[in-house]
Length: 214
Image 1 (spheres, rainbow, N blue to C red):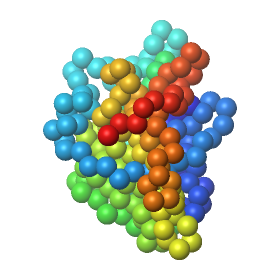
Image 2 (image 1 turned 180 degrees about the vertical axis):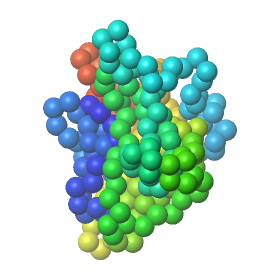
Image 3 (image 1 turned 45 degrees about the vertical axis):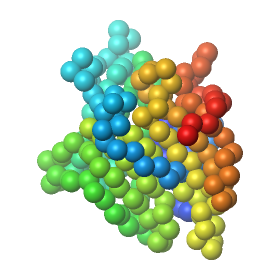
Image 4 (image 1 turned 30 degrees about the vertical axis):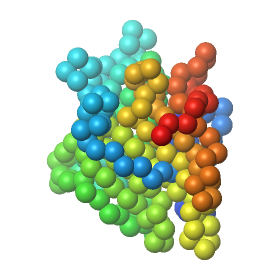
C-alpha cells in the first residue's frame, strides 16, 4: 500500500491511492478535522534531521530515505523549474511510502497559510492549505519542515454535506517508525468507522487496526 490522496469525483467520491494505495488495488479515503500545534509536531519528530540522508540509493540502486520533491502552489508534483515549494518524500528501499498527489486546478480554489517562492525558486513547504472543489472542502493539509503532518480529504454528497472524512496523522507514528502514521475514518455525523496504523506488515505496507486515539 502507498500513500497519497487521489480524487475520483471531487466531493462526490474520493478514492485514496494518494494518501493510501495498496500494492494490489486502490482504497477509498476522505479526511479529518484535527488541530495540533507546531510545537507538538516538533516534539513528535516531524523533522528531517542532519542524521537523515537525502536523495540516497540503497545497494540495489533503489531510492531509500528522504528525497526532495518539487511542488506547485497546491502541493502537487511539478517540474523544479515551475515549482514554488520543495518538500520531502519518504522511500523504503524503493517503495514510496507517501506520494504527493496531483490536484488539477479545474473548479478548485485554494486557501493557504504557506509562504511560497517564485516559480523555479521554491522554498520549504510549511503551513496549512485548504483546497475546495466547487466550494466544498476537498483537502485540508498541514505541513511542517517540508513533511506532511496532518493530511485530510473529504467526501460530500450533492447537498454539500460531508458524509465521510478520513485523516492521516503523521505526528502519531507506529512505534516511532519512519513513514508510519495513525489513520482514522469517520462517517456521517462523525461516526467512527475505522482506526488503524498505516505500517509495514509481513510483506507490504498496509492498514493495521488499532484502538482509536483521542
